[in-house]
Amino acid sequence: MTKITKKEMIALPDVKEILEGKKVDEMDQIQRWTYDYVNKFSKITRKQAQKLVSELVSQCGLTEEEAVEIVNILPTTLEEIRAFTFGWKKLILTSTSESILQKITAVHET
Image (cartoon, rainbow, N blue to C red; front, side):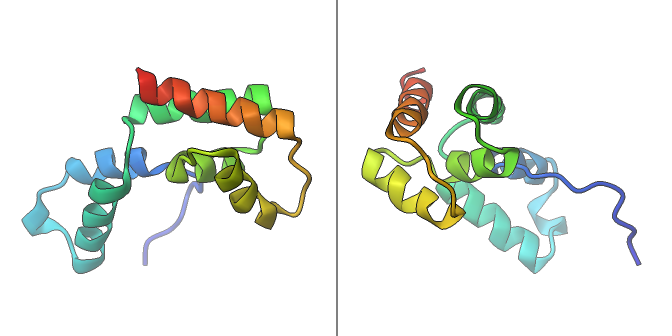
C-alpha cells in the first residue's frame, strides 16, 4: 500500500504536465481519463496557473484551495465568479470579484 507523504492542491495545468511525463500506454485507465480531461479543459500553462494562484492568494485574499478552483474554471464574467464562489459560504465583495476577473483576463491576454 502506498503511503501518502504530502497533500497539496494542484491546478489542471499541473496535472497535465505531470501526466505528460508518462507514456500513454503505461497509464492505467483512470490516468488516461484524467489525461484526456486535462487536455480538454486546461486552458493555460502551468507557469501561468502557478502565477495566477499566487496572485489570487496574495492580492485577493483567497485561500490556496479557492484560488486553484478559480484557476481550474477560469470564469469569464462577474456572474460566473459569483455563481462559482456562492458555494464557498463566505462573502466575496464585488471589488474582489472584479480583481479576480482582471487577473484572469490578464492571463488570457499573455
